[in-house]
Amino acid sequence: MPALKWTDADEIGFELSEKFPDLDPLEVRFTDMYKMAVELPDFADDPKTSCEGVLEAIQMAWLEYFREN
Image 1 (cartoon, one colour):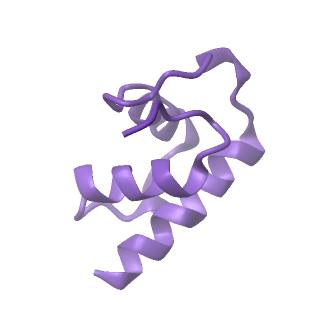
Image 2 (tube, rainbow, N blue to C red):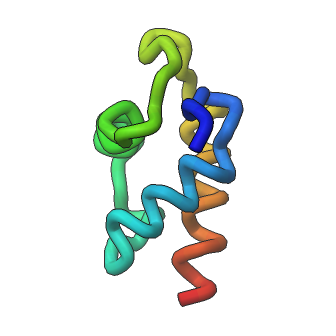
């Protein structure tokens, strides 16, 4: 799998849904989601370049996968 970057919100959301299948992303604080994302094995972007909009996009992608299950 290619290295994940902040612009890969959908893929990060998918990976988080796989890693934390029972966790409702709407109940996860952005600070915690940030940490979860940068700790993914394939994450290889600059952690400092994240912003609220990026985390919101990840949360919405994760929510879609969460609701599918």
